[in-house]
Image 1: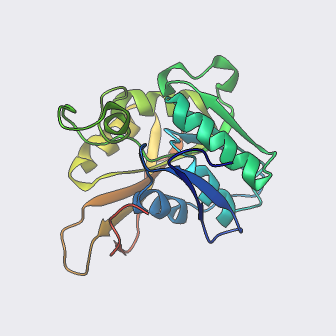
Image 2 (image 1 turned 60 degrees about the vertical axis):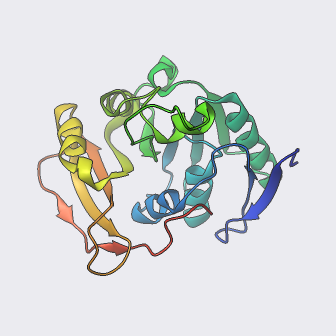
Length: 228
């Protein structure tokens, strides 16, 4: 149940609800774009890295109730505990929550997942003017892109997929990191704030051990770039 500074919000998919806290990092439209970009396969075993309040895992499940299970991995205990209460609120028994840095996810999950989703911290820089708990959700303070991709590779089954949302101006770095670690980029979509605008985000899906060849999707237009 919600505690002080918390509220329950509707996700509009699957009749699910999520608990949000105004003093912690709130999810943005980036997470929703990611969940709509990826198509689930029946019986998918899913992980949500950098899960925060659990928005990606919850919304993806709302869109794809045929997945087998979803595991939420989150560094911050406050967010991890809040996501666990969201699962309880929705009566979801095929979800689990693990509070750990992505780099330290246990060996029991090696080559375990068929799909990993991630809305990672993708800005560089310090946090002098920002609260630490919010800053590490947005900036590469506790997790770098190569560390993230390495963890995804180790936890994916052969043929498993890794999908993430990231900054458009870091496209070359994202594709290089994926290919360099054995996750072949297979689908790419640019996101614009409006028609004719410069892309500000990318959505990328890669497959562990796949052959070369990437599908470029039509650009997505996202007029809502704020917090939900």
